[in-house]
Length: 281
Image (cartoon, rainbow, N blue to C red; front, side, top):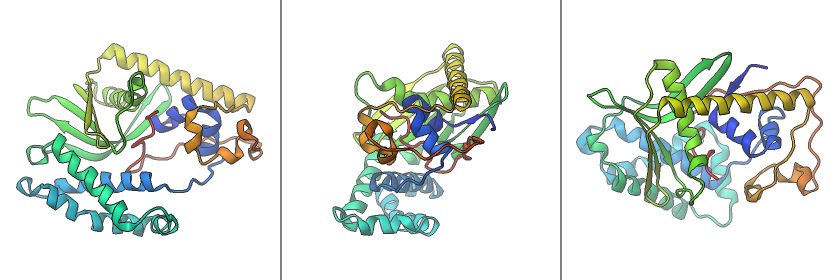
């Protein structure tokens, strides 16, 4: 197996080793959810809006991008259209209106006419002592003074008290990758929560990122141990209610598929929209 982790797969294992197994070893399909699809659409719109001249980056122009970006997503993933058609609780009008409201809220938090991102939807990858760390960053800003800001959009609400650390795990992971790639610690990590209009900012330092690196290496060591013992145990929590794998989980009376004789860990290449909400509790 290739030693490679993304923040979402690391978070999966920390949350529930069995969920990690279902996703990376069994590679079981997961049904697309309306919330996740809306998040992917909003991310796509917020990326595309920077293709417009600065003066034209308005809420109206951003909303006008929604139909075209959705059509492009459906062309890539036709099951998304089926998902909306099969959900009797949704109407296309209400679903698209919810996406447009999230786009509108972004304009109350940031002014894209004053921003010129250095990179958008950028894949990042580095290797640390044989362990590949990879992910995808929504936006990378570089100031004229050279200061670096890593920005990630979340279409949900900000985490409650006590859960900020879990939410920042993904961003610190990105900070670690950038530091190891460039030799410079990013000046600011910024989470933009469109669900409730909250922004969380965090200034990392080398000591913090070294601690995160030790944490990630410990996660990989635990994964290797689980592979050796062929033991990926469930870790029931309140998050189980949103898990597609619940019918297969022994904690709820299910039976997982047999592990293959040779276990292969597949950590996919980062793709746009990956990790957009994975680190949230």
